[in-house]
Image (cartoon, rainbow, N blue to C red; front, side, top):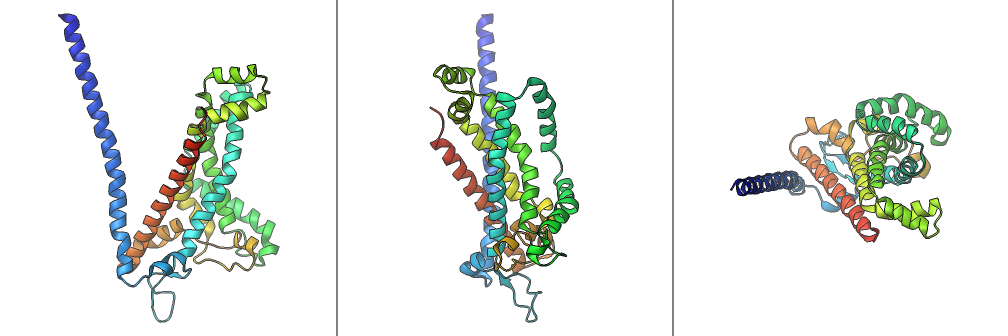
Length: 312
């Protein structure tokens, strides 16, 4: 009788836990859907107020309030802002990914234990560093350094150093600890039997890491990249401090474009959304929705690539 009562109590506890977890999962999904619906419902209003779809996505004249011209005519050309967010996110992630994977492999496969115990906690602490601190570091260190490095190429020493180049470096500093930390956990989760089987077949240590360990941890590594990418594309304050522009510069010199004051979506929203009203406010909702869609597309692509190459 006592055993039966314990069994019933255990079943009731398990059933209650399942219900609680289901409710939590449903709430998370509901919040995400609600954000998309709320932002999307406001995002499309701007096209009923004079903005054209082709001009919005491919134009480069962004002046939703009309205050930047004598006729006070609003312009909704967000192409430059969208391009800025895509460029700095993609380049920073492309650079950070191999560096992070290499560092994670070093910690899990090659590094002495004492060095791992010393450095890994520092990386995890650095993951939580406030973005304003990194942005300030970029403003007082990275921008002046780039100014001295490429000032002659750009031709304007006063503004050289600001722009996409500095933003990419700042994002690298921000996302490297995140990707490294999660990648280490993913590689440590790979069973030792996979390593032993690869070495038993005659693989060198390098071949074992590249052909066995990395493929086995593909899903976890992809998650690390996704989280790093999510932080990169949504970063506002640190990037705004080092972009320093209000419009897309000329593309006559492609190298110089990266080291001139420039723009992206988050900078425009952070600087101007609070003071905007009417059609201008709706235009910034549209930018926010575009940012959500870009993030969603990046996540879907990375998850698809991970599913195609999972170790079997």
